Picture (cartoon, rainbow, N blue to C red):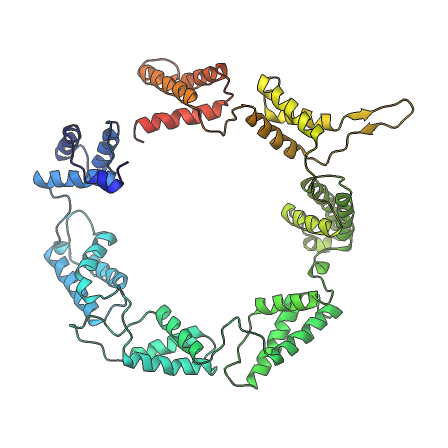
Amino acid sequence: MKSRRGAASAPWTSAEDRVLQRYVQRVLLGRYSLASEAASSCHRELARLPGFNRTERAVFGRMCERLNEAGRRVRRPWTTGEERVIDHCVREFAAGCHESVNGAVRVCRERLARLPESARPPGGPRGIEAVKTVLVRRTAPFRRHGRCTKWSPEETRIAERFALRLRDGRFRNTAEAAAACAREFARLNRPSPGRLAPAWPRTLNSVSRRLWRLARAAGRPAWRSRYKDWEQAVIGGYAQALVQGRYRDPLVAARDCRLELCRRRGKRRGPDIQVRGLTVLRNRLCRLAGGQGWSWHERLWLPGEKRILDRHVRRLARANPPSLRQAARDCRRELRELHARLNRSDPARRKAYRERTYATLLTYLGRMSKQAGRAAQPRWTDREKRMLRKYARAVISGRYSTSNEAADACYEELFKPVSREPGSVLVRGRTTRTRAAVRDHMRREAHRLGERWPKTRWTENELALLSRAVDWYERQRGTRRLRPGEAAVQGLQLELEQVGSHRGLEGCRGRFWKEWHRRHGA
């Protein structure tokens, strides 16, 4: 199989040249205002030719060559005023006045927009991609390894000085030190225009990374460093207060703990002093308090909500209901009734009782039921497999129009009475399966037996019928027949039913139009 590059470099055939020349004449006659529009139409028509494997960009380039040969300039030449602006920006970049090529492109485009009308090109302003292409090409001799250049000895000395200050705690963070270091860099002498690499300006990101590495090498601890002894003592005291109930919210305890750490930080100096984040402290407090028996969830649930949760957890442990999703839906319905009752009894605190989401209940019920000893789902028994196979054959034979109907019938039969002796209580078949599980396993069994579901790949016989339906639509497309496309789709579905492929009307319609667009190169 030829690669994309190999196909683009192959010579143009006579048929391709004839189609291309026809669209070139249309552009010259004014039928297309832009050459790109003509190239798009030409590419769609060329895609119908057998063996065509060129990109739209290749067609556009070939068309531009033909138009230039015919005397029509597709790419507008740069005016004298634009050339002067570009040369001035290139000299500024070589002198180090621009941080990067993109910065020079932005400045150059702003200056081009301020040119007088006589110096502007016809047809509107230049795009930023055209300006960037020219500047990248002309500034190539003044760039080495992109825009990242080697640090000079003066820059290294300044960076090391600020890295030591950052290590000693004279700056709150690396960003503040980088900004101060950048201001110091600005006082350096700019290099001469003939130098390959300007010493300044550096981006704040590069200065920040450099300072962080130097400060780490000088002994500054990382942000996620190990807690010191005095920090652990302070955080342990607030974790104990959280366990004792003096704080209801761990976020409030984290704020007070951070204030205490900042107060003690003012009395200490050294490389091991830093301010912990609020989220970091909250997570640390929750972990320490959780090891002492405190649970974050205690403050999240009302007493009535806890009783409802415990009841559904016990039901899940007894496999009644067998589905975790069903238990979450039932629990959510009961919680809604509880919240409505509480809102009616206390209208002033209406916003305090928020509705629990389905995902939240699913997570909590699953975790708590496992802790309560809920057993995992057992393997499918022989009786269940025989039942699934029986209804899978029923779907294949056409007794059920959809798999959902067959799954409902199979689910009901799994629960039907298995023994009914005179004078005894009705004994129902016990199963821990859900309707969704029964439907999925029954569909899998039917697929193994040969049933073709709509989301499976089309076979060769089905593709042949599809091609015949598209051919019929192509022949009847120009007639006055009422909706020939819809008639072709319905006929395709009927023919597929006759050969035993049960595909829906929407699936047939989508694949039909996909095949038609593929033929026309859309």
